[in-house]
Image (tube, rainbow, N blue to C red; front, side, top):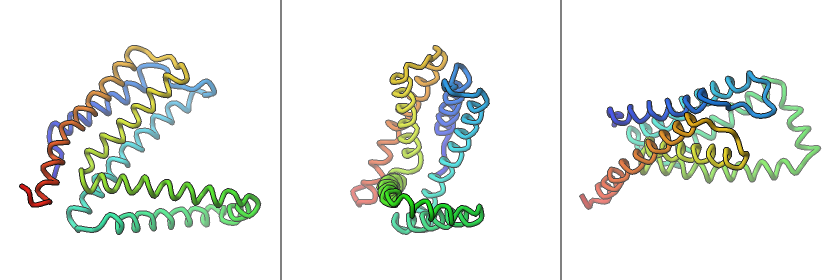
Length: 197
């Protein structure tokens, strides 16, 4: 299923809201040197682009090849493990990493705990993509990020301009609208798969 006009308008609105928040007020931390805010915005843009591609690509794999979510997780994690291993070897950090783990064995347990947590999160993400689609996952993930930003602003007592508040309200409203609009389609899809429609 290709995104419709409404999907593109919502995506553009969310993107504009994110960039309006970043550029219409102070976003630098107290320890900032000044240049890292622009780097942070660039990293955020890269993250959003790659995250949007990943969800859509996974949804296409589910639809085109009828693979299980566990197969998809196996392949994604295998590529990730190989990439990490190659990075350590090519950067010459393999030996120092293993020596560090030998000196600090608690990191091994922490790494296992982190891997198990990531697996649990990945299972939820892949299940959401398979059952509800990439658009619903993107709405949920963006909503989580907007709430995280709002909580961080409140907890740290950060100065926020009225334009930044409007940008957050715009993003939050569009994401809630999209999540509500997608709900009936998800329900119909489940009923159709179950043979009830």
